[in-house]
Image (tube, rainbow, N blue to C red; front, top):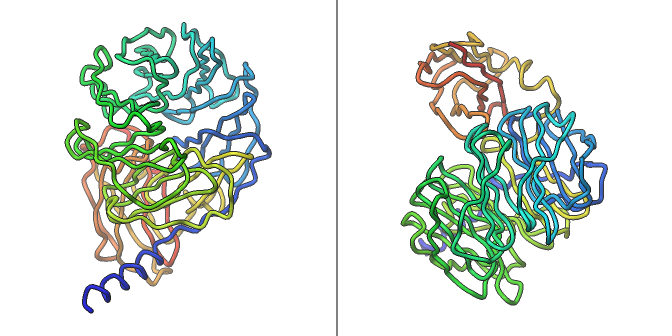
Length: 400
């Protein structure tokens, strides 16, 4: 009886934490294979027929940007609001395009690839990797001005990769292909897990905790979990679903999986249990991107972009009077003060960098708190705190 009661309470608790997803008007019906937000306002999505769309108000409005090529773009990645890349191509050519002005203009970079590219990631503005068909792996140390070929032990199509830092990374692909590097891609080791499974996405929360999703030969979603730096992968049963296309985590406990026919799953237990989210679409979903724990986006076929935790307008990040942060910009000390207009006088505060990584967290136990952030490097950050049933988001600039 006790177990049943706890299970009932868990189901109720999980339901209360389900995100509310809304369908955004994108202005296109093309397949949007990838969506990426470097900050809470600016985002890009790319897809079929050379589609590139951009928002500067958190997804409320989207504009089409001109592409120099009409290829099927597979992935878009921005390191900040100005500098970004997208990859795609055909069976005979890998395409990389780049912008340094927020997409006002895009130009093609020389990839040297003779196969289409599926994924691109950067650890900073200079160092990036791209992977794709025939086991191809490319690396740049100069923002993509030059791309060099790295050798991999496979000829399978590589669909996804992640770099935890400039040395350690993973790539996954068709027929159960899993690759790992510990030297920036100079050498890749193979850890194939299931030859009948095509693997579409890999994500690590920390080095010892990684996840892979894809589909088996029957088109069912598969989910793999590693807790030993990717050396061994456990096939974890999370129920029968359509093919999984993407997996990401916003913390060690909270994660998401997107897949075919509108599939969207959420965990709040670090992948132990999963619940289905209501998406309102049957389109295949191929990418998830979160800025912090609440503001997130999912892209897919038929021009679909779903959003949750969106800003109500562009002023929300600077004009919300319930939470004041000062001085801003700051070099060391930062003070949080809740307005007397709010009944809430405490709460959890998270500070995120421009890539959505939590760099500081604390609890506000009264209406005012001062912290030392002198250890954080210069840059743009975002402060988030739930208050009065809303999510307060503030832009923070650290400048020393």
